[in-house]
Amino acid sequence: MTEPAAAAPIAIAPLALQGLSSTAFAALCKARGFRGAGAARDVYRGAMLEGVFDPERVGLGPEACRAYREQFDLPLPEIVHVLESDGKRGRTSKLSLRLADGLEIECVRIPMGRERFSLCVSTQVGCKMGCTFCETGRMGLLRQLSATEIVSQLLVVRHRLGLSVKNVVFMGMGEPLDNVDGLLGALAVLNDPGGLAINQEHLTVCTVGRVDGIGRLGDAGYKRLNLSISLNAANDTLRSQLMPVNRRTPLADLHDALVAYRPRRNFALGVHYCLMPGLNDAREDARDVARFCDGLGRVLVQLIPYNPGNAPLTRAPEEEEIERFIGWLREDGLPVRRRITKGRDVMAACGQLGNVELRRSR
Ligand code: SF4
Image (cartoon, rainbow, N blue to C red):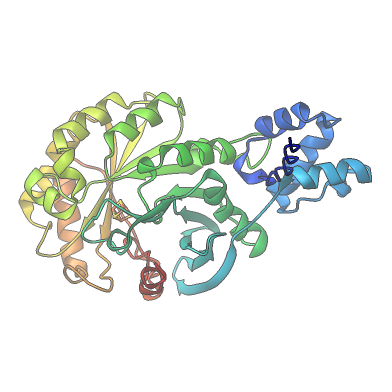
């Protein structure tokens, strides 16, 4: 009888720190027999706040450092390129990042005035929602991003490029509520007081209306998180043409889900409306928006002038068309803010992520 061959040792890949909250990291360190909760806390904070995974720096001995390095790391995506565009409020920077499997995603740092910047992060490689006005929608869904890959976008901008970011908006490539696990994992890390500590007021999730995801986000109990919906049409016929999600989830169902999602009394729902001349800019379209918003509590309509991409549905609206539509919305009692177009020349504006090279790399 021959002896059974000894099993080859299974190599366990190190865990990415930026996919873990500080408490999850501390619990893993404890479970794996690492000594010193203070050292674990300092290692984690160094990684998140300075982008450096360096156990030596916190005074650990060589053995302990080796153990940390065997079990954890801080892998960040490679920066493929950064495109920049200067505007009145500051510089917009669009980053293309290469993930470990070679796929690429984009994120955009957007100036908000007074030296504050928002980072618009991706949650998926591509997207399956198929919104007709969106470049990403034309890629289809290649895969979900993990919480690690979502948080990494912020770490790259802050620590590889050395740029500040105040707000994080989940409005890049992909539908965040089609990747609820990745989204919730990322929110836990971004909002973690033991690490990045970004207040919920500075985090915004934007959805096309995945009602199942809205329910799960509500259940997660973030009371001060911002939520926006990408509405773009408030009658079912037109919205179903522009946004296929509406065929499965008509406006009445979306309305119900939004009524049920009220995390706090003073919550204001963001209602994004991309104005597309000849498609959704008639007087009746504005009335439809007001009807839809009725019963939703406080709302703020964000009017976004359409950005023609590589296969435009229509042209960009003229100034007077934008002002006229805003006037109608206000006449109908809605508070409206106009979104200043930023980064159109580098395809970094709304609906323009997922460029030709990315589609080709698919
Ligand atoms: S607008 Fe958002 S949800 Fe729609 S296709 Fe584009 S990325 Fe997907």
